Image (cartoon, rainbow, N blue to C red; front, side, top):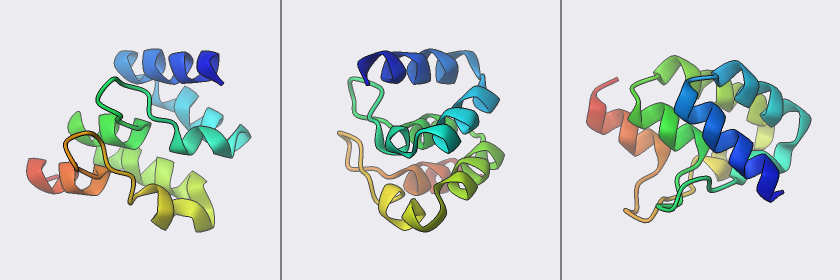
Length: 89
């Protein structure tokens, strides 16, 4: 799992969102992975980068689990949706 987390982090930092969508689809456990030291998930990073379209794509892959995953907070107590709200996207 650590290798997959590292791959998610690298993909997010490089803006390779298609790879992250594919990973979310093939391995639902990756959807909950906290991939930064501040405990951000891939949706957190997409939101903080202003990619609301990517957040929507990631949510679509989550299916029924989306509401639980979107409740995940980072170390700052923020969810991905809160980050989107702060950025006004």
